[in-house]
Image (cartoon, rainbow, N blue to C red; front, side, top):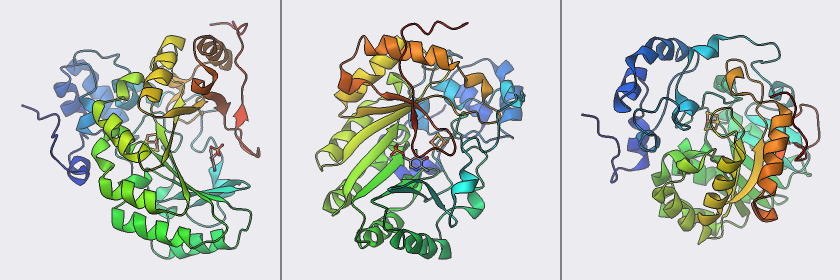
Length: 341
Ligand SMILES: *Cc1c(COP(=O)(O)O)cnc(C)c1O
Ligand code: SF4
């Protein structure tokens, strides 16, 4: 017997009870044990990690479930493909001090934690050297001093890993310190935790964000409408009621969400939960994940089909990160992009 969800447990307990054994994942979902050897081998490249709340959103018996495909280690991860690298966004070149990624003029990324509640197979940071790049201990003072000495900065983005894996104590003390830096106006939190462990959004956290002098933006990462649970809806209400702006970024992933009708359903479901679609990213060419890639022309066609079905404010910006540029690069939807697929 596998207890799938524990409705009454707190988020720390959920994080201690992740599914990390491929055999257990297959057994919970009643999937063919033939998938096991590959799953075990590929989990050596990047461990399996998935909260039980997220597993509960998957359809048992369906090896093509769009949520399962995001976490299940596959043989395809061993296929080397030219152009797919360990650091596709070249973040190593934009780290002025450990744990800080500064690429764009008025905002800076702080790597608060190396850990995530979930390991997404397509993550562009799956090879990120977290051990030497997160702001704990002396690195925190160094990061704060870098921000203080950079007058152009108006926004700090807490990222990771997942910054909400961090305890409230550590998180609140960092927010206290950021609030004291006069030039800062905005604080952004990039997180997938409210999606995969919705109980992370406690009243205490929401209240602390409400009290901030900074404008608070939370950018969630939801790729498929099936990820939106009643518990996530509740978490979003708690945040919206306290003035937190909720946005979503998604990644276009082959076999997961590479159809206009799924994207349209996602935008509509996001809006019902009080979240605005922000970015729809083209896949970043990270080593071990080339099987998620789709051609840019196909993405442009999907975007054009979405645009025909959605109000402008529910249309995410199709974008890509090209190393060396001053911002993300927007890509236009193209109804004529038929390409070769
Ligand atoms: C994506 C990113 C940001 C945020 O960019 P926005 O377009 O403002 O969402 C900031 N810093 C880094 C290093 C990034 O990769
Ligand atoms: S939650 Fe985000 S940072 Fe963590 S593995 Fe998934 S995509 Fe990567």
